[in-house]
Length: 220
Image (cartoon, rainbow, N blue to C red):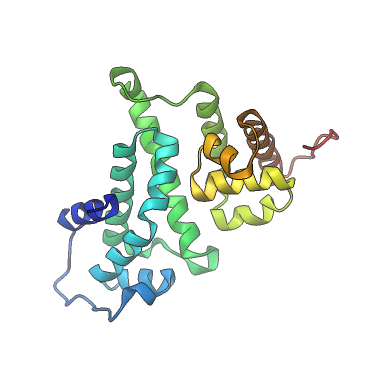
């Protein structure tokens, strides 16, 4: 049994409030779009929840793990996000972006909140788990206000204004949850360069979001 199957079993075992009305059934949820699945979740369709959970589990856990540096905590965050989605399914607004961007944004925000909670309780000091390096923690802290203002859908136009390697680094980091080492292997560039692309790209995105004038310096 895969990790996603184990997590799905735990999700279904969790106490979820279900109203008296009969749950909607789906012929084949695998062929439904994300937006269709969310619509069915609003009608209390457990099959739709399972389909959406299976579709995004690995991707969501990768993003949460990058922030939390603990796989178990990341899985808990993702399961919590989907349980809340089933209990309070009306938060999605198609006019503000795609279902995919909405889901990723929720996972991202919930993982950041969980990381702050764990840090306040000295989780990383009391355990043998790897704590986020200082530079990574600073980077995540810098991401937080930007993600407050932009969903991943809104980030794409801003990313198009970066250099090619900055854009690729940020896309792999934000949308796929890859670490600097994984990005380095993917693009065939050194980790120090990837770190440079990330922080330069992050600063450029911050300026774009806040509409600050860019300094006249060489781009890399």
